[in-house]
Length: 487
Image (cartoon, rainbow, N blue to C red; front, side, top):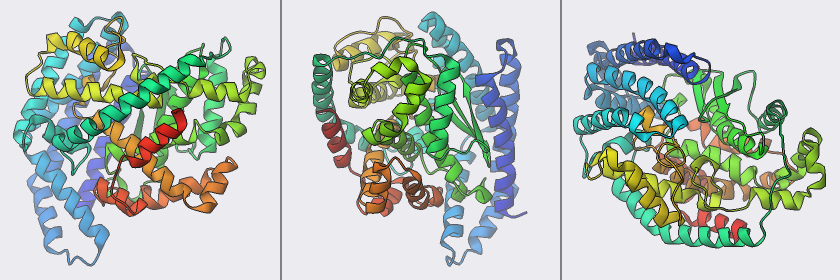
């Protein structure tokens, strides 16, 4: 069996695990969670054994020895398979199984703790996941701090120090823009017409809009969950989720645009290379660039709503007395919200700065789990000027820690930066710019497919951005975008 055949076989096992993990978050009855944790733990262990066995090593070495370098994609696939193999073999199967079981139980505990705003109920699970994360970081090795090893798994080629330097540079600009944008919005405060915006009506609009930007519903679907996400269960099977607020249809709609951005990336990857690095997304920062591009650069533009606002008014009659200009002011208004997933563009990155700091301190041991709520509230008050009213709106609002996703959060701001660069570059093409002005996003999607999606994971994130835009990754376009839109 060739190494590529083994990789495809491994992908089948991993995608089977994704199916039941998706069910766990959407339709599974709560009492089934303990057994589901055992199922996922068993599958994770078997997948790890497959990816680290002697046969895998032998076939990978054979392929590397026979690689002449004449096929760039083949060489890139082997390079990435080697990178994954080296990381995987440093982890014992028992640790992988333990983490899978711990995250299954933690996600369930997080949902209950969040509902009750009870951090103490979740704290033992977070302690366990932190212990696992530190053990993994120690086994992988790191340059300066444990966070480096975890971040590498989400955004290869970067480091904690590089992210910290970037965030330190961004912090004064982001805080200044956020404060000015919030002040401006407060001076021209506007509210959406009263609901109800029924779930059925929201689902109708969400599906029409997701389909119009290119999401293929013959190869995907939208379901409901506590925390919106996108997951790929296999070639031509991409699942989006959202949640609904009958007082504000835009909450779900922008959630769908965000997750559909992820979904478009997944649907744009070469389906016949599923299981190989060339058929996989390169990083979460690049992934996030796709979701933020469609959610914010496209979804909050005047051109977009010139096309879709009449449709929204037909579905929600209460909007008929609410002019488009007022609606645009509403969806572009800035406010210091405690909830990250509901935050506007101008204040969003402040949430990431907070989480990055909390995660680093938890991992290096300078912040105890029991002290997280107080540290969260102190950091939030320093950045936003007020304290969340409870743990539900504070340190329990995100699912990521319960998923073992420590090291994940910086990729959101990296994604914001990349999204602005990619959108600015795409719009420099007159044909794409004209189409966007007319509400036609097929040329934009085609550009992203050619410059981002088609490359899979064959280039490092920074190299992919540089090849697509012609310049090294920079926050210049992002700051310019925020300034123009909000100030």
